[in-house]
Length: 127
Length: 133
Image 1 (cartoon, each protein chain N blue to C red):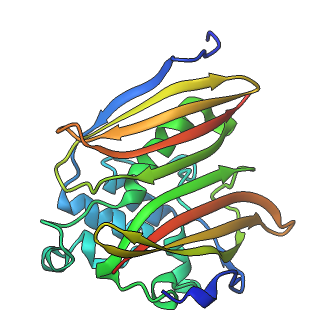
Image 2: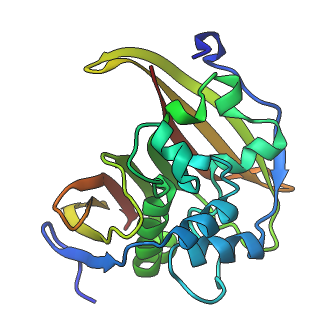
């Protein structure tokens, strides 16, 4: 495999929108008791139109993509959630090489179908 | 937010990765089957609540006012299915800021996961929580 260089796209994948059932499963799997992910009335009282997809699900998608590609060379992942994600919203996850020196730094972005960025971040890969 | 808790270190607790919980995580992500390896983000702050690290209660963040601003993971050594880790949580920083819609409070909480019995640091996780006014 050729060495990565600045600008290379490491992944550009779209995950289908999660169902409410998937949100229930993810909350169970992460031991997350927050009703905002599973209780429509609670989410509305909190000011949202419906339940919120868990931020850690976005992190888990990115972590899985990075681990699949880089295995134990994956050193770090830093994710900032910038907009809520709702059930049914597909996520496009892109990882692009920002710099390739002794360690490779990737710029990460996550967008919803309407173009809204729901998360951004960086990952570091050991040489 | 209980700003006086900045710097608080919780008593350590122990965790072992659980295949059933990991399978539910993956199913939630839309991935069928079982995980061959422990998913990279399997360990997360939420698992501390069952071990006395209830950030939302301690920091006075009602769930309906809580937002999750972000996460950071640093992987230092692999953690396998049969491993046990000791987890130490520390409230690293607390801050109050004025937002457009009112005050916001920010909490950065750091978790260190050490492989037992050697207590080798294997994973560092930082979670960033926000309380809306």
